[in-house]
Image 1 (cartoon, helix red, strand yellow):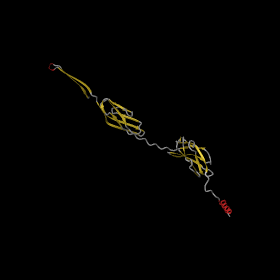
Image 2: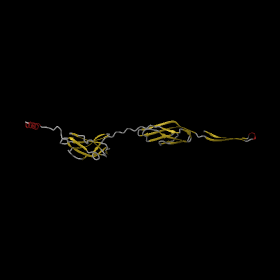
Image 3: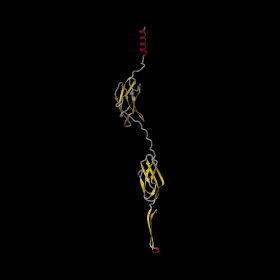
Length: 243
């Protein structure tokens, strides 16, 4: 009776066919090679992964990361394995960094193949850098008052991206230094302006009546003599006076 049951079961399977409940996983195909992104070797830590266009693969050594611009050399081999049809499949390699992902190449799957060298080339757009910070002109000076000749130290306190400085000291004098010193020879009250220019544009700061220069005092000596009353009288005055 037991033999009859077995016979009937075998006949049923042969008649209607049978498929295994689980496909036998294909032996892995191993890969290694260089990775180039935008013309330069990939930075360490770039992720390399692989997918197939038919079947399913398992995530064992897939993905891997780059070391020294390569994968599978100084880092583990990239393995492609899983339930892949006997006819094989096309492998697609994906290159991923902090800016995005691109396809680096393709290859036909071979059961138990490799290690196979596949150098990957990817183009991943880099983020657009932010616009330069517009400059904002500002400055200070010391001293701002005194007698001629008066030497004043100017300090640039501008902010933003700046390439050039253009000073005007109010008496016709100019400078292109960042923080110049300037000597005023004549008495007067002077406006000072600073124009700064950079990739983000230009800006000007003007301080009106900023520098006050007084005339240097003039030394004098005055002598007065008199013979009134038959006597000689002499008086001498000395001092200074502003002009």
